Image 1 (cartoon, one colour):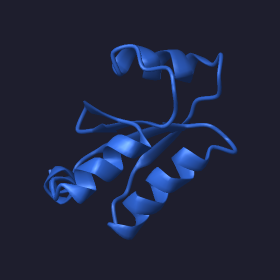
Image 2: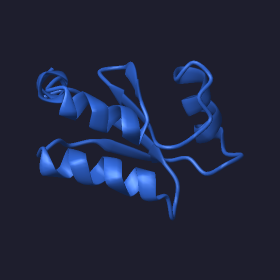
Image 3: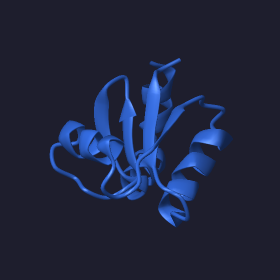
Image 4: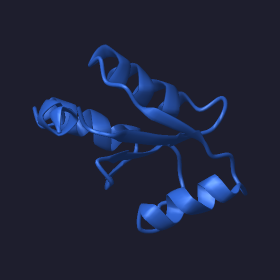
Length: 85
């Protein structure tokens, strides 16, 4: 199984949507609390190439993007292969 990291913040509908999709897929992930102004948010921004929103999702160290990007991968039939590692 791939290593999945997701940077999130409280009360984020997009974060909840991304986690729900990963949960439906049976994927395990490390959730990193990254509220605005935190060191974790800065780390997420740096790792993602400058994206400042959450969630920021990484699969095996590769920046996937946010919730919409994750959903697009699933619709295109590419997410399962990434999750399998």
